Image (cartoon, rainbow, N blue to C red; front, top):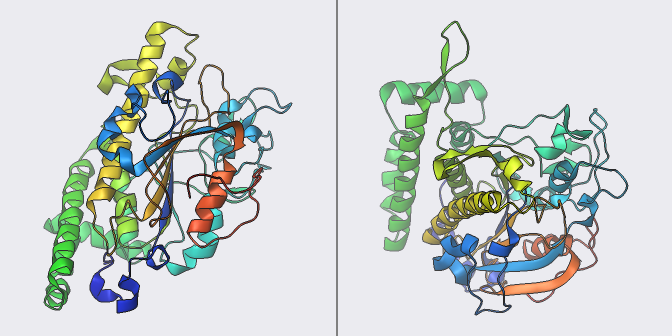
Length: 429
């Protein structure tokens, strides 16, 4: 079972308060269909801006993130290819490359920023990267005006023709992180734990007790908090392992392992990402809250209409209000994830201090389908190398890939160009 980083694991020299001594993680959290920008964008620049309505759930964390205005993915625009903005916006979001318009097997876009990092620093961890989501995606078929479904359901691209499939079942993510990698043995272990109502922790407690007897007070507290977190997540997962869905007229019912409550689904998947970072199982992650163009209903917040339909608001006041509710709901889940990261103490700072989390999407106004002036939030202090707590306004049209170049530099992956980048982003790092 993986452990969080403890002071007792490190040489004395590594305890110095230096950004170079820290392990820095990076994650990219994607939301679809644009955002109601008038309730997202602060009216003033700098540190003393008023939080817009959509961002209010992040009030307690405002000193830990930046709002970046003006960043653009120009290669998500049509550029002569006609309709298909949803597919292009997801495909270009982390690549900065214009996807080939095809619904066949000859898909092509570019390597995404997360995979550029994974190829370099992924060898230092058990998993080079993890790809997560809350909606399954197809790798074939026409999902948006002649564009393959692979574009709409993928933001992580291992190569220009290879999207990384995301995992949407929190239970399977948990077993992947805490299993031994052998599919048959992982399944058997899960079945034994379920049948005997035992936690994965029950199988390592003797080793854990021996380890705790050799740790200092702060490390013992950190280990206790970590074990408590793992057990709490297991208990939440167990509820959904028991849930079933009817899969046919024959009355066959199977466990889903996936919460029907969308907020709980996002939070559980977010918890998996946090655990992976905390235990240094990976330092690179992507997380799609939903596929681009998703028409999911949000009845839990009294929005029964489909999200995609609402995003085509035509300035209708009712639809604009519904869109604002959806956007704020997503930010509430982001706040949960960031607060979890902020609560986890590391050798120097917190997990959030030692991370860079990009949140946003590849469409600005869902009605206009524009890909300039994107809604982008950057959370975390990058191991002490990022100035946080501000709204920074860049010239509209500034390549979003300039941000990625700077982030890659902070995790030890110096890259000169990526997609349509023109240089590193100024003013934050």
